[in-house]
Image 1 (tube, one colour):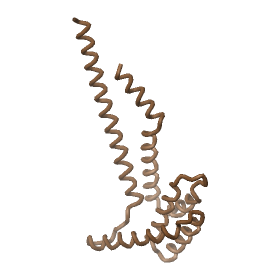
Image 2 (cartoon, rainbow, N blue to C red; image 1 turned 180 degrees about the vertical axis):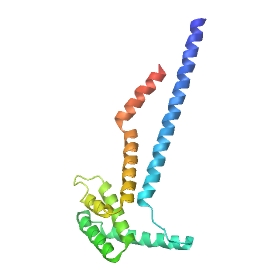
Image 3 (cartoon, rainbow, N blue to C red; image 1 turned 45 degrees about the vertical axis):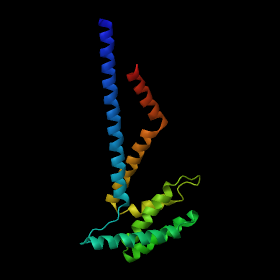
Image 4 (cartoon, one colour; image 1 turned 60 degrees about the vertical axis):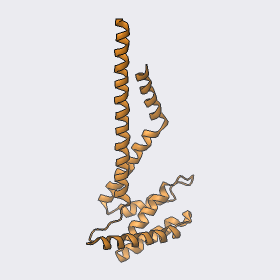
Length: 172
């Protein structure tokens, strides 16, 4: 009778530990997802500082969307995108067009993130050039990259293996 009760107690302890472990994993996944979302917004958000009304903010967003469409069309040929985006950064610097510079930077991020045997198509140079005098935005990109790295690590096979082995400990 005592051995049955002990087995029952051990099973109850294992089940409790397994439940707590699963909850902790879920909380960590949620935390990582929230960090990716928050840091992505910091990098890709449309700056609307100075806009007073919601209508003005929407007008800024509309200008951004139109500019984004133009930049995407002009950089469809990825082999020429570095030169095109570099010219856009030059134009933005000459005219003080912060939105054009930001769109060129964001497009460089997107192109550079595409998997390719050709590397990042020279996009890191565009990103570095944009961030050269923007320490806050450089920190935002670093935070975003760290969040993406944490999310990828949580999904990689080694991490999954470690989770499975830990999970097996609780199943015994």
